[in-house]
Image (cartoon, rainbow, N blue to C red):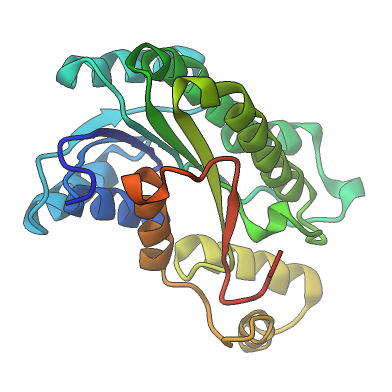
Length: 260
């Protein structure tokens, strides 16, 4: 097991892609702390980890909008074994699907509060622990939208582009402590969040669900949506010693939709 006994925080691990990431890290031997506002879903993830042969996971209900709760999250995780080897910043929201003139300041702020500010705060409080250890791996979940425009999704696109900037800057800043910081940029991942995005596009464009789904799938050379387990596999790799010489990278898992 590549991550045997390493302590890992996964934000947004109560559902969707975060659940798959937490499950994969657990299968790789990590002791996973699931940080999510969705407590019920987090316990379901914890049960799945144990059923898959992983170690018992910890559930730490956390609202990533609250700095105090993030600070408490890190303190709670340190009680496991006074260390944090892995931080996976997965939590994110889709934000509004609207033209710029219809987006409210509140919608903009709400998107950034989770997608970028929450990520920054998790790093702010976990990094001192990793510096003291002299090692650590941070994986930030961005998006292929962090590398290209996505019309009608301005707050989301801007926040995900910000994730790449945060990743590269932290990688440059923290390397001397042997802390690696990388990003994963998923394409269209099948699941509830994609369903919500599709509904927003349907409402804005007037197209049917079948039309919207077909157009999105056809955008990739592999003509498919992404199964979250493939995102989890790349995250696990980046957290492992196999990726010891990788930092500051933003890796696409997009079925070829984006190639740079």
